[in-house]
Amino acid sequence: MPNGIRSNPEYPGIAESERLWGRSIGLIPSGTQTLAKGPGQFVSGVAPKYLRRGKGARVWDVDGNEFLDLCMAIGPVVLGYGDPAVDAAIREQLEDGITFSLMHPLEVEVAELVRRVVPGVEAVRFSKTGADVTSAAIRVARAWTGRSRVLCCGYHGWHDWYIGITDRHHGVPDEVRDLTNTFGYNDPESVATALDDDVAAVILEPVTFEEPRHDFLAHLRERCDANGTLLIFDEMWTGFRLALGGAQAHYGVRADLVTFSKAIANGMPLSVLAGRGDVLELLDGEVFFYTTFGGEALSLAAAKATIGELERRDVPAQLSALGGRLREGYNRLAAAHGLTAITRCAGPACRTQVVFETAGGTPLELKSLVQQELLKRGVLWAGTHTLSAAHTEDDVAYLLSAYDEVLPILSAAVERGDVRSLLRGAPVEPVFRRTTDFNQRPRPAHV
Image (tube, rainbow, N blue to C red; front, side, top):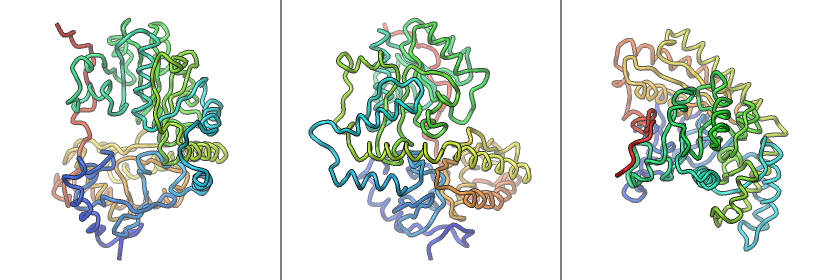
C-alpha cells in the first residue's frame, strides 16, 4: 500500500521513480530541467523523483505515495494545484486557442491589471521565464544609462551576465564576467565599495530569508538616485506572495524596474518586466526584446484569474498568518527539544526557511535527516515552507506534529555525532559550492 500523509511504518516505495530515473540517464543532462527539483536536492534512495499529479496542497508520485507539499513547484503554485478558478480560465481560453498570428486582448488586459496592483508600474512586458526578464532588465538598464557594470545580490537566472559570477561560470567569457559584481545584503559598506560611475543597475531580491535592516532598501534607493543607477527588484519570490503589489508595496520602496514570474499564473509559464515608462520605452525600438510565446494566451488567462483570486481572497494576508504560526511553532519545538543552537525557522512568514548550523554533522546532513524523516511521514520538504492558499490550519498542525516526532531524532543524532550514519542515501547537495562573496569587487581589467 502506498504511503500517505501520516506516520507511515516504512519509507515510501519509489520503484517506479527509480525506473524512470534510469531511463533519463544519458538522455537528459543532470536528469532534470530544474536543479531545485532534481534528485540532488533530496535524499537519494528515499525521496521520490517524479510526481504524477497534484490537487490543493497535496501531490502524488508515480508510485502512488501521497505527500503534503511544502515546495509547491518551487513557488509558482500560490493558490494550490488545480485551483478551480484558474483551471476554468485556462479551459475557456483553450476553446478559443493558445497562440495566434496577431496579438491577443489578454496582453492588454493583464498588463493593465499588473499596472493597477503593483506600485510605480507604468509599462509592462511579458515573457516566459524569470531569467528572460531579469536579463532584459539589465539590457534596458545598460541602454538607459550608457553604462556597462551591474551589481547584484541573490539568484537571477542562468544567463551569462549573472551566472558568470558563480562557480558554475564555465562557458562565460571573462570579459562578460568582469562586468558583474556582488554586494552583501544588509551591508551598505559593500554597496559603497562597488558602486561607481559605470554601474548601470543594482539588482537584488528585495528579501529572501533575512529581513532588510536599518532601511537597507531605502538606502539602496538613495544611493542609486545619487549615482544615476537604476534599481531593479527581482521579485520572482516576493511578487504577489509577500503582498499583492510585491516588495515595493510591502516595504514602501520604489524600484525603477521590477521582474516577476512564479506566483503570477499559478503554475503556467509567464514572466513580467515592468516599471518606469520612460525607461521601458526603449523597448519600442532601441532595445530588442521579443519572444514568440510572450503573448501565449493560456498563461495570460491563468495570470488574469490568479491575480483576481489573490486579490479577492487576500491570499498574501492568509499566507502571512499561516506562515507566521508555522514559523513560531517550529521555533517553539526546536527550543523544547534543546535545538535552538542548531536549527531555527526564519524569513518572511509567506515563505520561511529551516536553517541548520554545524553540529554533529554538516548543515546539509542535518537537513537531509529531517527531510528523510518527513518523507516517512508524508511530507515533501526541501528546507522551505512555500505555502499556498490551499494549505490549511490542519496542514500546519500536522506538519508541526511531524516536526515534533522528527526533531527528537535529530537531537539524539547530533548528541551522538552520527547524523550521517542515519541517512539511507546520499545527502542533499548545494546548487552552488559557494553562495556568498562572489566577485565582490571589480577585478582588474584585461590588458
